[in-house]
Length: 357
Ligand SMILES: *Cc1c(COP(=O)(O)O)cnc(C)c1O
Image (cartoon, rainbow, N blue to C red; front, side, top):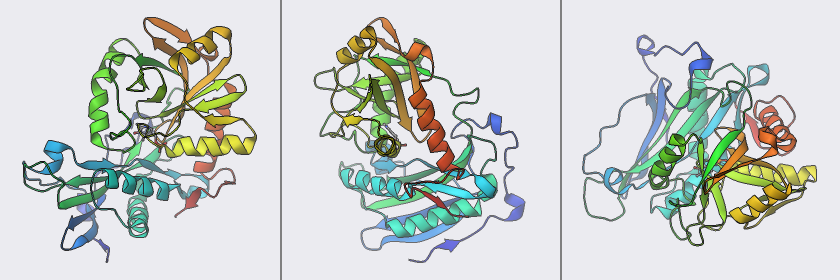
């Protein structure tokens, strides 16, 4: 397939935000986007990079009623010697294809989309912020667009990629967060769609997230939907607990999103010789470890924050403080290591980082 590039007319270019400290997350988008369409007879076709534009959708279309869609989230970093770096981006595209299989949507060609993504990032490279911790967020999305109200998989799809500058996750420094353990709502259940990055999971999380915010907590920690006791994950992050010298995270058994940062952290810890296990553990185990002093650190992992240390866990009316409410040494070490390789500042012993420009 041919990739056409239709650059925006210079007179139509949008102003690039000047103050990186005001960027926030996901509000600003660049001058261009990638788009292609799928139909059963043509497959994926009409691939182009063109000026950022609204989509025209039939109000009856599949995604708007039944949520047939999948998305990804990754970043391009401006780092050493003004280089532009991607981190394990093919893993995001592979995961997107896994989500597509679960949602009965056509897969994308990894090489083609990887190439299109790089061309888009480089075309809009002026939008990649210079300030530390800032990046260009990349949002691929696939939606089912049949103009039909019957509940069945669509036959027509749109795939597009948006990019836009995002601010540092911790503008005031690396600050631990407080999390609310939800014992009322669940996010996902094994056999459902929890392991796919698809809109329904986030719709299911909104009410719990709202209630947690109202109570002064920044994220929801989800327990498993069946026993309501095993730790699953947090908002848009996987979660790790350090019990004495061993780090544990929940196994990927169908209801958890397989995070790329999660996988990277497991591999880094193994390389560092820090014991790390994927096993089930309950909220009771976490609380008794907190009480006995065995719970050393807790941190979330995900593309947005990279590493997010947890200071407080709230469960059934009680607050439990972790690491004296500070950032633990392992969380800090992981954060520094990942950022250094993502920005091309330190050698990457894993071959995860690719300089694209
Ligand atoms: C995206 C996401 C993650 C983190 O995945 P990364 O690949 O590390 O960014 C974790 N949990 C959920 C629910 C997510 O949506």
